[in-house]
Image (cartoon, rainbow, N blue to C red; front, side, top):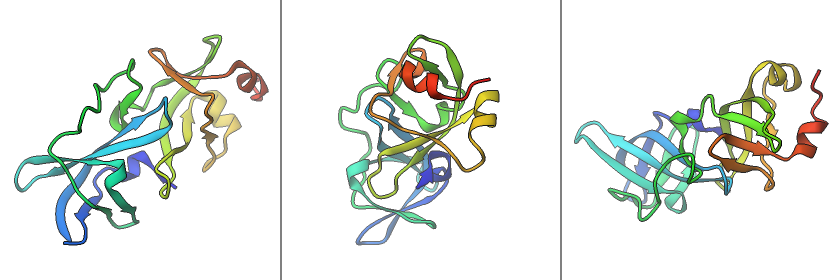
Length: 166
């Protein structure tokens, strides 16, 4: 697994040619679907941005990412924003996490992405509750029952009730 923030600044190389495309500027995540949608890659030499769709990512390696192809813009990816569920990884820090009854549970600090499937594996959460419940290196695992609303990430009430809140 890799954190979304760990992708920022990583070099991206197009395969099989080995052509450098630039460095990851941001990851676009669909919180509602629980997946990485793609990456914005910035090439500072030519001042150009490339879009690498998730299906075109060949590998997320420790030193670099490899991509089969890149485009100048995402095809009909839709607007980024709270209503769409598509979020830029830079904008996720501080996103509220709520129980379905709208009780605040904390905020998103980062997102874990499965390197193989490019699905969201879980969330690193911040706030007094999470600092006490989730020791360092732990996460709140993503579940299909999570949904994304304008207010933030909403988890089912039954899961929220099982959390050891004091």
